[in-house]
Length: 315
Image (cartoon, rainbow, N blue to C red; front, side, top):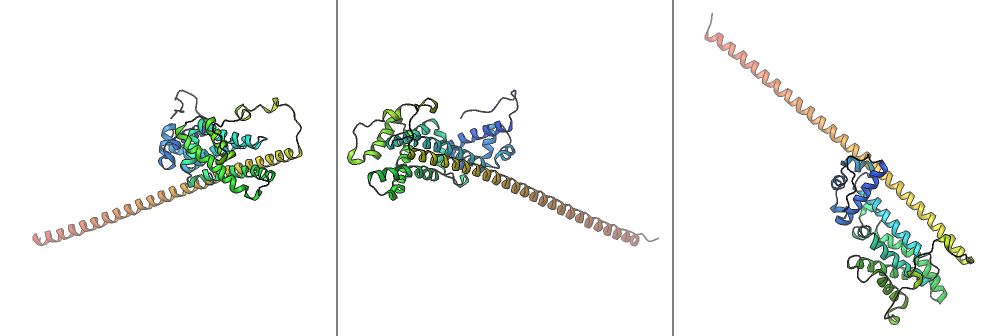
């Protein structure tokens, strides 16, 4: 794992820099050991900070895990969403498969976290929920394709789950084997999805449109936009705004949960301190009572000894 800690001779990290450092370290540890196998102590030790620093930023291990998972989900979802903006359905499918495989290749740690734990600490941030979000986008694509081909558009949600599930499981398998290469795997995926078993191409390949890097929007030649495309663009913009609002709401909820956890932790520590103080007071009181009993017993013995002395030696 890359060491991202700074030497003592360098400047002190700002709060945002420290937060990013802790996220980077936690991401690597979660990918290597999973949620349960990673501890706050290990995160703090790797960052060369104390545990309270981690609690201050995230409220605990659950908090930093939720942030790591949410970032990976947004990154992957953004790549898939961009791929599905292509005009032709075949190109959409090719680019979506390539996007997933590129994410796995470039962000292996992140993908391991998404598919490994699906821990309750991540809230809705599980691989299954991510697949559902992607499937909902593919569903719209398939509904249009089904309607154009005379199929029942109501079947689109079911086919979307089948298609996305096939690609996702292939991605999980490819995470470790990495053979064949990314484009070849994507070509075979699309071959099965697009042509079906009865029409498989023995030597499939990705189309040149999907293989070529995307042309920046500023350099794309102007083209006439149809009313249908305008509606699709508007729907995409509305969806993007909704997703941004959802992300903002998730961050607010995470911050509130972290604040509540911090308050509860403080209350627990105060209660423990109060209990300890009461225990010490009781022990001190018991010790004082024992000393008083001993003093009284010694006084009685001294008094008895004095009486015996008088009996043995009368005047």
